[in-house]
Length: 169
Image (cartoon, rainbow, N blue to C red; front, side):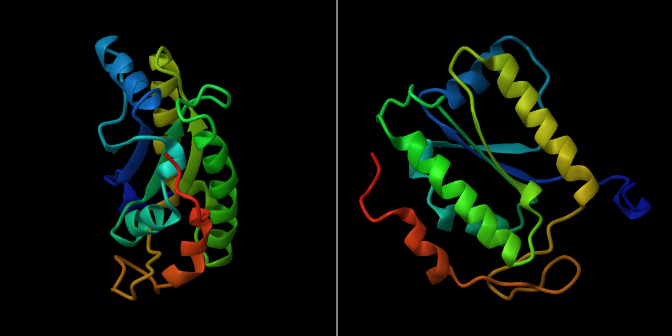
């Protein structure tokens, strides 16, 4: 049960959505008038494989309570291997974030196709619901004062190598 001071708390969520599938799935959810949480800010990316760990860390550092990365289903990527890259990077980044003191529930990778508006709505709702009991994110890289608690940091050079060298489409 979350503390009473979080009674009015709504998590701030950044969603990195693949332009070909997940973003279109979000649009499908909207045109179908499916209810989705208002507190997700969608960032349209060419491919889930283009979501560099630095972007995710920057989102957390700037106050996001959760980050959701949504891409095409495995085998359906318009760039062949982009979602495979994301499927390798995100678990590795999760283990680094957990080691640095962040709850792993704050980062999620999932797959949504263009026709799965209902799946998109369910994933976003479940993610936001899972973040509420965790409360506000107090984890920071930059050393800037967090909202509450002590800052725990991971230097950006530590994760910059996770981008994988060769650029993704």
